[in-house]
Amino acid sequence: MASSAGAREGFARRLRSPWWRGLAAVAAGALPALAFPEPNWWWFAWVALVPWMLLVRSAPSGRRAGLDGWLGGTGFMLAMHHWLAPNLHVFTVVIAALLGLLWLPWGRLVRHLLGGAPSRRRSAAALAVLPSAWLVVELVRSWEGLGGPWALLGSSQWQLEPALRLASLGGVWLVTLVIVAVNTGVVLLLAHPPARVPAISGIALMAVVTTAAWIWAPRPQETGRIRVALVQPGIVNGPGAGGNRFDREEALTRTLVGRDVDLVVWGESSVGFDLATRADLADRLARLSREVGAEILVNVDARRSDKPGIFKSSVLIGPDGPTGDRYDKMRLVPFGEYVPARSLLGWATSVGEAAGEDRRRGTAHVVMPIGEGWTVGPLVCFESAFPDMSRQLTRRGAQLLLAQSATSTFQASWAPEQHASLAAMRAAENGRPMVHATLTGVSAVYAADGSRIGEALGTEERAAGVYDITLTSGTTPFVRLGDWAVYAALTVLAVLLAFEGARAFRQPVPIRSARSARTAHESPAHPGR
Image (cartoon, rainbow, N blue to C red; front, side, top):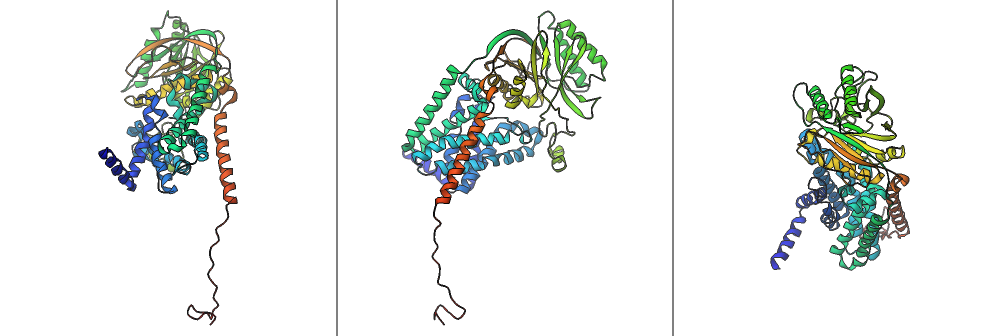
């Protein structure tokens, strides 16, 4: 017992050093990454913020709490995006540090509400304010120019059924709010036991809300069944890689003859040539569609003949060739597909593998009719991370959501599993099945409730997988109401600002004791002279 007390004292002594404290903040901030694939400790998310919040609440000043928030946010971003380092090199750290700044105000709020011996009122406020403030951080960094909504805390619960039911009510945003509220309650229990009443009440409320959603949230209605095939050719390198990949995709697709599929999906950048100028490839695809007896959705990554620039486009091929249904990717990957403010940050192309030429953007969502009376809403690559994009496709009538992706650059990392898991959350939010088709894995299919259908195609597989999918109808509360959880969080923060502003206005200004004035002829020794 004495040794444990000594260890605690030694740790506390180290934390008094700014450098040790900074390292502890970075490490504590990185912990939530373990809840995501590939570690996939989804249960850890419910306590992963506790070490970081305990550290921040103990900060000796608000300024230091803000610094701990920034360093912890930097650690979180580094842990979640470490797989970018081989491509962006030192720029990965720069990006993480810039994004980490978003957690600086959150750190100050943690100390303000949880520091010292918080009253019951302050503890109750923390249970609402801190989750809301965290959600606003996630909202801001979800802007495409800042990297998009990768690693939203709620996304870590992609395989937990009650959390997926919550997502159908308020999207991934509502799941995040509940997770941070539970973490806040645990911090209160550990750091200030007298606050156990609001802490336990808050945790119990989150449990009740989650259970109620699990039991009573409306479920999508089944309307029919389709059979979709995903073609995953695996890594193809060397001279003529584009043509060799096409040959392999064609051979894998031909194995589907006689399997009665309704749609064949190839991954992102599966065709490296403009089909309008390569009639030979368009004819091969049309012949392949006739042989298989299904339309083929390919993804063309090439310079267009009808428009200037390079586009990434989902193109539907039928028995007679391209059908005219085409979706041009709208949200591009910063640095991977374009360089933000290229005139200022163009040097990133010499440091890492940033895009040498900016891709061009599409302008509108597209819902494509397939076969006899059903529709598909395509997305490309990290567009599957944006809740609003799949929601818009569902509102426009898409019965199957679909993402064509390629993570071959990051094969030996956490990225493929992380990316595939996003489709489960999008499926649950919209009450629509979703397909995640990649060139090199992980390719996966999810039912309308977010549960996985069949076996995923891993990063080592070259295969054509066939999946039986149940189509659904109906509208989830998230599709109908949108980002109401975000607006609720903004309202909570607005109330806090109004309360703090009113309190500052009512607080009397301290009166300073004024020194007696002296005239030009006075002196301290002889006043009045």
